[in-house]
Length: 340
Image (cartoon, rainbow, N blue to C red):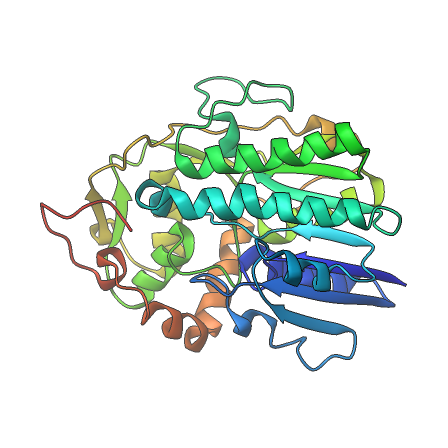
């Protein structure tokens, strides 16, 4: 029987991955370790809490004693635990370095101590470690040029993970994914924020002119890629994970506005954030060469996402009530800083 440790499993992507595991594999045990910071939410795991084959540990990946406990009898580890918001990293760099680098170090040291039993460690990284690209697409061997504290911390964590493969021959795989969206996303993120603001008849804040370009990956596709690599990936390798669904932020916003039944008057153009990368683009041919391919285009995935938030207003309204943020509240001032 395969036993999983999912760190950060109460967050958006982590909880979706737990759900994916139970839907696609039988005779498993899943243990989640999560600190339950602002974006960790036990509501994301309510479907599993009462299962005999599920265990939740409330703790920090920076805590060696907690990690030691969580890693007992585990075969596969997927590390989603991270500070992830670019805007937050601009104001609070230290917490990002602690979790995204030092926390990864604690995990790796415990993997080393349990080397005989652990068959796979997946370090979840991001396309933002590459920085921006104006033309073409990044391959896994492209230079890393992170341009904000968040992406710099993620680059540090993944390179540390690779060093443990090279030095200690640990079964490490690194993934770099494009922007995720879908059910259970924290409503501070752009797609759920825009959807729920529009449901509440509030405007949506679009940075600058909305010309930045992103590739949008439906969360179920990301989960399927991780699961595929657990079973088919090669240790020591990096894999780009994307959907080749590149749109400007304005195009994305217009699609959401139309799906919710609003018009362009609901778009509020706000000051751009510092160091805002213009375009990310991933070459995913390496991963696709192993037999994986994204199943969702943006229009299909957005429709499923809008429908989910429409059907789960109790879930997201509870979260938005806790957010002290002018973009959530629906008001702006000339002297206001960028989104917190």
